Image (cartoon, rainbow, N blue to C red; front, top):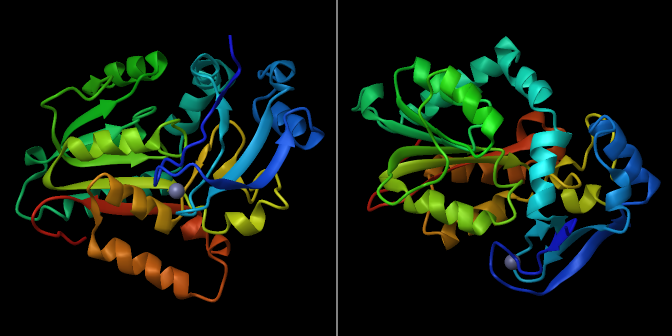
Length: 300
Ligand SMILES: [Zn+2]
């Protein structure tokens, strides 16, 4: 069973010319120490020893990614065994009031794109629903919700909470809103995933995509700090294998036929004009962009 798989083509523009930003073998103490701590000793470090942690950047579009990723079999172990389902579930189901407030705000913000409709007339897909914390909030507001997930433990949890679920997007499924929170940075094929999202969005619908903000990574990667609150989280080994910036996420959206809503554009253009490095502004640790498709441009 192969431990690693290789990706040599840029997911954002399709080019295969890139340069190396950072490399370390997985036997290097800086990485073994981080992995042992982060996965509380559950990760078989020995099996990863010969692998190389690399961060590269596309020559053509500037997209940053890890070409060496876990194989499908090891990816499954990562998300179902090394990350303990029970521990991960509790971190969501026992989340703070502040976090729930943020989710509620996000539900309201998304619904504001459809001022003429009542919640039950708006269909929402939570793509990569996880433990369903966000989709439960949308459900509590009366929206017509559905969660997409492949993990059996998370699907079971959703069923216990009466959340309608699907395991893949079949022909004919369409939604007014597709919400993908902290998904694209984890998947081996973000282009294909974003393409699916775009093709299952209704005309005039909104795709809300949230990822860690990689705007400062070319500066931070040379001195990564893998401690809590670490700076280079947007390229975290094994898990954050795609690192997006405002520019590259927008470019990937364009490649799948989606455009940014106007407010998404000016918010990040303004942030880019600020003299302070964006990583120092807490709200920009995450990058959330609203995309739309269709004959008219909606605003937030
Ligand atoms: Zn590229």
